[in-house]
Image (cartoon, helix red, strand yellow):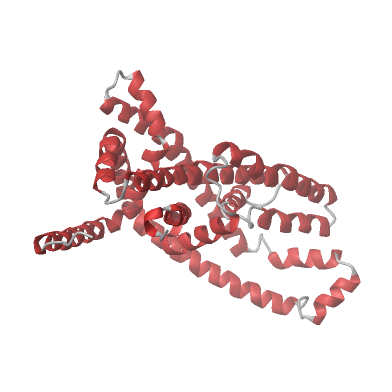
Length: 352
């Protein structure tokens, strides 16, 4: 090992300090920077196509790619979000006014259950309408307080969201236009051998593409199909439940079934037999198979990580980083696996 001189040590210390300071300055807009980088990776191939169309003019190619992102991703997402907020507010008001009465739904299920099952529930005190009403009231109060808090935070953070969106689009333009030279400089600066850098960088970009392109599109497809089924069956707030199913579909071993299965059970228990059977068949044969059909096409087999790794990394990432964590978690897990595979196969780290 080469011994570092005092000057080199001082420079490395300075480099570490200014790097930490720069990251600290960027932290308020971490989400904007992160998603700017993600979109740059996702739309890099489209940018290269526009380069050919514009006769190798990077600025125009980046502008066309940016316009495509706005039209194909951001505008539809904004419209869906506005509709979702409106539907959630409607459901909230109907629950508060008593038009949606969960105690009544529970009572319908009790009347449809066989006597032996009702007796079993009575042994555990689960059929008492007084205690149920008390629990529902407490739950509604808690939901009201939480909803009010989030509504207030949303109103206060609207300006910050718009600023973050502007920063992301601005950064995305430059990452598309200058991303290749920037990536080349980063590769050169990282003090690792060519083999290690190539494997880790390729893994990083591949997992981001796989996570966003694969997982998000699969989740969106499952949520959309579940929402259509709920709309067809006249279930309350189908768009809201579609978003919930899409969100849960991001988690392996959980999935959209945690939403549609209880609804199917409710239909069957209350005598709506064809609705319940339709939802079960549609959920198993259509919603459930989307993952098996679409994910291999969108993600590919080479990037497949074990489901338990994806589940734990996704949940842990979202716990630490919020919504951004569903991408950050699997990326960190993939880099962890790749780094240990490299270490295990590198001869220079092991004795003969």
